[in-house]
Length: 120
Length: 111
Image 1 (tube, each protein chain N blue to C red):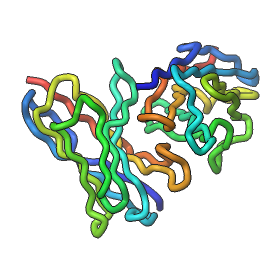
Image 2 (image 1 turned 90 degrees about the vertical axis):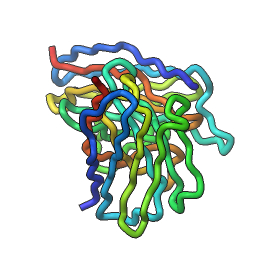
Image 3 (image 1 turned 120 degrees about the horizontal axis):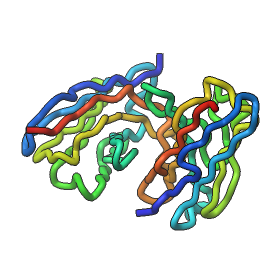
Image 4 (image 1 turned 180 degrees about the vertical axis):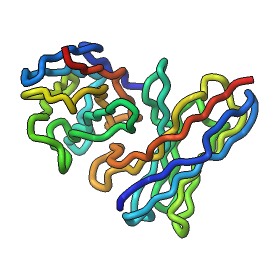
């Protein structure tokens, strides 16, 4: 079955760190750009970061630059998001997603999401 | 960033009746290769978003043909020809031409 399974969310204090993981199965993970997105009631859906199949190109939304790091391990079919210096406004459901092979910057497969709560 | 707006934000519909959702972008979504990267997503309650349509009007595999997309430049529309109960949820437009951004969502429910 083609799927993405997100994990690693939880409660963390402001200023803390958390690492999210995404396990891919059922497709050739190493051929796809991968993405982390997040969703909040206030700001809606946001594109957080993306990474090229070989990891050589990475892009971040402005508000997470210098604090979040996206990475991947193609041998393990896994995507990661290392989050540090977390702020209240980083509270969200985080989704990993696959970018359509043939359509620029368009997710065609989403994980189930993992909730990150930043609170003291 | 490109700002995506949608209207209406809430859409009560009658089963079997048509519905449409408008999406507008603050900049043209035509990419340098001539393609327009505008997609529509459906998010049912408690689920992740699911892509319905990409590049304005191409329906994803398995998406019922009652869903269709149209538009160009900065103005786009999602059409549902006859609303069914399973169509309840929030619908988002998203552009991938520039740094990707999403619309605020339109909540569709049954009258």
